[in-house]
Image (cartoon, rainbow, N blue to C red):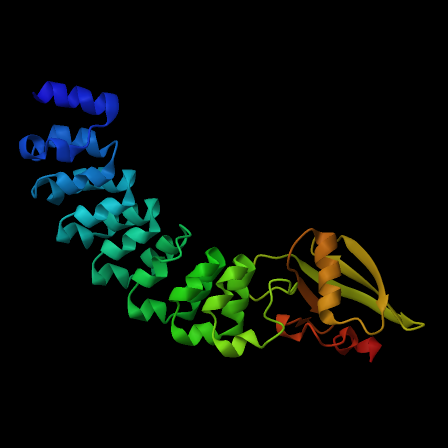
Length: 273
């Protein structure tokens, strides 16, 4: 009885496969079901899985419903956009053409699903910008970046800052670099981190004295031993800023590199030399 099925859907979200033989081609029933459970599109009739309006409702409720959509709709940017917005892993069910669309791949990555990059076209997986964005959103995406990027210190550093457990996916050579550590306080280009400018500096009795000034004009004064490293300094600045990483801008607009954390701080400030 159609009215009974519709009422049941409204009350308890009846699964469509229970009545697919009778109502799988009934648009009203299928629409009511997918509004509560988009995956139920799987049990809809072929004609309805080719109905863009209905498929859009299904993938907006559950992105993975894209798997059940007709092939032409798996190649429809609007449908795929809606699907990956709800679940980045829905990218795996998009057409090869869509999987090569950088903007849709970026959208999938922003959902934080570690496998989203795995479902992108080879050219996208070989794109350094996309690889960097992927690991910044989910460090475990390091598993799915191009092999060359698993040996890229910047990409690996950003990945382990997001999730230190992903270090197991890095290339062996990177593992021997002591600057590639989650505790590294110096920000990488493109990171969201505060900028501090070293405004003045002196050395007295083997003590470094200087001022780190934020963009907002807040000054922080430091006194550290003369053998202080860039990493030590960065950690102190990050601590007062309440952040994990910071940009350090030295005289001459030299931006500190996170791979120089073991170098003496006086190497970066002219008057210490």
